[in-house]
Length: 338
Image 1 (cartoon, rainbow, N blue to C red):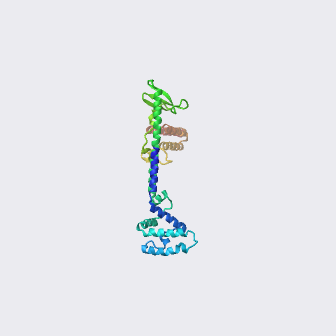
Image 2 (cartoon, rainbow, N blue to C red):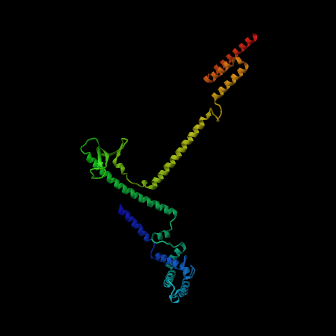
Image 3 (tube, rainbow, N blue to C red):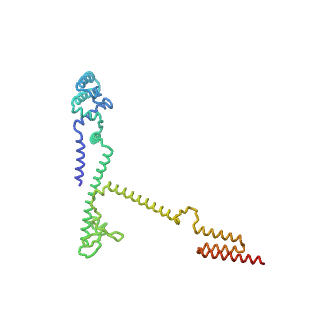
């Protein structure tokens, strides 16, 4: 597995190195040298003194003129004059060759990379943000999958060891039996792992009394377990829970609104209920009877309170009202006779 990973890295490095040929690197180095000696932004055309659309005849004429200016014999003692004169010849040679000039024009219009190695490749291809994101996602997903495979191989070896050791420790016993297996193969002391052997099955017991097959601790790796798939699954689960919670809150609000409705009418806050209205009516009747006959106020108030507290039927309440009024009238007549 490690050899495969190293081979993949070596292949990527080889492709990076081969991304440019010798002509590309010659152009890159020449542009860097020109900008270092002649100034930032100096191009082959500006160094030669011609336009980018100049013909070969114009380039040759400009070369003869420029070579006289930079000839070492006419510039004795000038630093780097030999290198500048030689560089002039290389620039002229590239611009006279149609293939080399076309290659230079590409970098002249699109920009010349300033890094070597992988930096050159990145500057030449100029990938967009989307391409970089997708590439990094695929790369990291592949590396994550490789790590999962390596962990699976390690866990499988440990499961194989624990299974064989547990079966060996339980050999000869019938039925379900608990055994302890050293954590390190071949160790006689130290930490150990408790396992349950039930026939050919080796189980891993838990504190709650349940047990799972030992092979379950080494699940087979898959692309669905890489980080992009897990991230997508986690976001989707969180959004689903949020939508479910919002739906439950809406149902609770609807139920509360339905509770506030009585016989098809909306009951606003502060509106008296039927029981409260009945108690208020009883109080008004008691006050009216008190005004008519002070002597019977206590009886009428008691009667009103009994009507409110007991919640008697309408017919019984009317009979009590009639009896109370008749008794009061008889007492008033007897008082007038006296």
